[in-house]
Length: 265
Image (cartoon, rainbow, N blue to C red; front, side, top):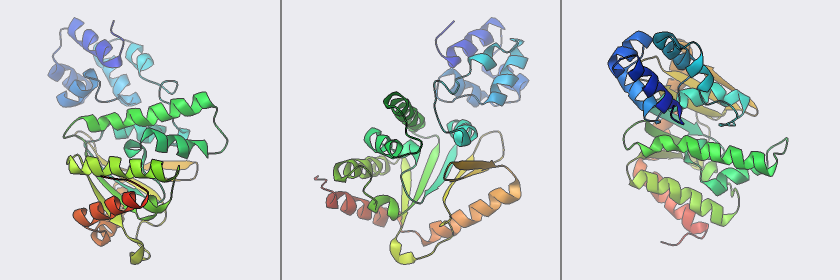
């Protein structure tokens, strides 16, 4: 068998004589989701793997082979959100104090992880950085997921890792915007209070299931799938977005801040 989950899934499907659409129907999934998993662009959730095992009569082979915590070290509070993140067709996230994982550079991520408690060993920190950079691979697809990034100005002003690291981090995000891969809006300090001051929030939409919201604070995080709760998150996000700087003004602020940190065009 192949070396990745997608390789295993494709081989099992073909040996069963099924097309992607037939497998999708049997597993109550969409054909495009099957295609994403086989191509390695999406990580199957635990429920995905269970459905695929049932549809292909493979026992728990695919469930057992599903990428696990050893290969994708993340905080336990983020495990469920990670699965959703890798499957989302649209992500709208808000960051209050630091760049979210899928937009972090290696040096920025290393610094964020370095100051955590309890401390990580060098090996654990390297694994965690690799995981964060791996999460960013969802941006390799030029279209999906659609990503809107809303961030407080504090994210730009806090010098995580020093001037060089910050200049590199901010310009990494600027280039993603210039390439029209993501949209970024900044909540400037002058606004004062806004609806998302309580912490980090992420909204995610999917092809074949209702949207979810994820909220995170120190060492805690929760995925909300109750429609009323998701709608509350969406309402707060929309209100904050309405107060944020427009795209071009946000870009101008990011470029100016990167220049203050020492970036030169």
